[in-house]
Length: 411
Image (cartoon, rainbow, N blue to C red; front, side, top):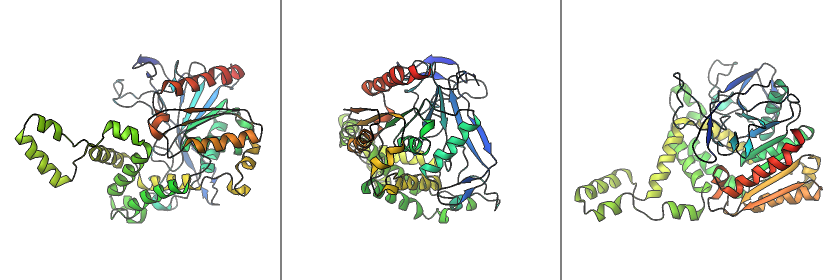
């Protein structure tokens, strides 16, 4: 391969340089047998790569994405005129790129869009060859294990037999963990960030409330809304609002929003009677009064425009189903006994959706099996979203692991 698929362009901040990238598509003609026993016929995976694959093909790092993310891990896109598209930065661009914690001057990084997604890989919005209509609700159930199997097939097509590392946060961390169990000889290092060996009952409950919001939307049409040219946007809005509440910590919510009334304080301070009248009318028509309400509605509206409802149902179910210890009578240590990788596990103190206690479960199970593991528990105020942010201690921990533990083995 040896192809550099991006050029250094500029520096936005110490962690945010931009690289121009282009998505690629690989079509598979051989059916994929799923964990459910069903088979997915010919399908496509969309992916992006960053950096250069070395001659030994030993420096590849696979990135696994979370619920609403995609293959677009880092870099930016350009338009037809070659200009950088606004807000096209990859979702982990602060982590991956030239000179960043996962340095693409040294590693060949691959981001893959999961099956069932709505960002290019075959999913519910694609055509079911058996019917000629969009799959919709008929798209087969997919699991974390199915995603890993599909990713392994892509690596086969790219000629990569073993990965220097697999890395992911949240649901991506679950995929990372599953990689070490399904293909233990193909993974040398695993970086599991803000994740868990399975979901708690509370997490499953949040997912179910979000799903009910979608399926009870009058525009859902039993999952076949595309056939009637509609979309359950109201349900998607509520699902996203629920998600945002769980991704942020109470401290961050209070710091960002508190109990501030939307624009009211400014109008009162300025004694702007006209503005106060407009605000009163706005509240009576929309019900939006507090800043946090406005923020949640904005996030919900934005999400409902670009995300697919059936994809949301599929991915949250995959989250719920993941539990490698289930086949071992609930014994996580026994489930992880097949892993051969070295691990870096990272958690954040205020992440109550994937708490540090869940990461420590993974660490204890690995230590029980005498697997080498490093653990970092970052005291950060940001809640679950911390794994996407620029906490210097977090980024330094990842950088140190790749520089001093992963790189010497492959470079």
